[in-house]
Image (cartoon, rainbow over all chains, first blue to last red; front, side, top):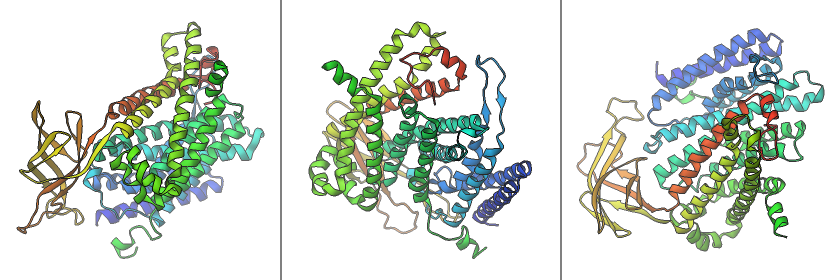
Length: 273
Length: 279
């Protein structure tokens, strides 16, 4: 079997498994949904490993949408661990908030289907894509984007549930943690991109790439969100609203432009699946 | 009077307004870059001052967002400097309240990030005002070009190709390229290897490989070998990479600080501790 067909088949399988997990979760069987979710992650993880291996040491730069669902699935658990206690001496306590399972599965499933239906993997990487900074730029960008999109999920739940939510503490923790790490990875991605740009083109900014503008806009927006607590606009509702707005922005201005035209993934290679 | 101006300039609400305006301006920039990339492409080679006087002025309706961005960036720099300095001074006055030196250093994280950002901005300013660029210098084997009183010659070009039986898309395509350049100026002569993403540095110049030929292995006789390079003389490089390095250290301290349990943070609450609550 052609490796590209294997990559596509594994990705499709993962996507279908995620969809089954989502239906399971909607039906209220969260534990089973978690296991199905894990199986989907394994399928997509293997697909991504082969995909990366095939282009390595060059960078699969236009293939971000394939890596994003896996990133969201993997890093979405960042918000699950909570350290409690006023003195900081108590043992860390784990919260497994079931209210986050469904949105996380929903996000991962939607992102997977979008990658299947709008693939953008027909560009050959050039030699300028061969540098450690390019790989860091790509992988950290995926991590940052995944976390920003994931942070929108608890933010949405906080806005819908309001003050009465019993899981509010966990949701706030998840949102803040994803935001913080999302900013961390996004910043390092921007810096790696600048280093790569200087090595390859002699300037830290390539001015004819529109993605540069939205990347910086997203960075500034999240920098603003991280400063909100210093202002009078520090209510939970405003912060949750800002997180949700950020996720919508990242989706439309950073994720959607990376998608290709509508076609089935692997259609041309396999002569129709 | 000066005190009032200082206070206004350092206002966190001014920061909010500037950042929000910059984000909105960059969204407009996205559409302009997407639809009129050819207007902005020369900026890579000309530097901001020359570009502003030519392309920038000619297509003002397309380029206005960039001029606004530069203005907002200048204002943000001023605001960041005042705001951060105020907070660092307050933090220093309250340093005895911290249980350890490490906790004090952790709290400096956001301020290190802010000052580093200013160093980066300074780098960009130097780069675009004082930087010089010599685009599309074609080098043929055995020939030299003279750039900024430095002679650059291509001594050897070594291109490695994917084998014939590799993946059909990659077969016979170049997989690595290295060029041996010889730099000569009044004081010195030195051979330096140039590659993709591996610039050659000599006497304040950086040479970056942009293109080369032949990209595909062929058995034909007519294979013209050349490389195309861009030569940069950029005094801002050190500043912005130093700023990025320090920003990363500040960011690591900030993230580490946020990982400390909330109870610990509340104990050291004081006016100079930017970034301690909320996130």
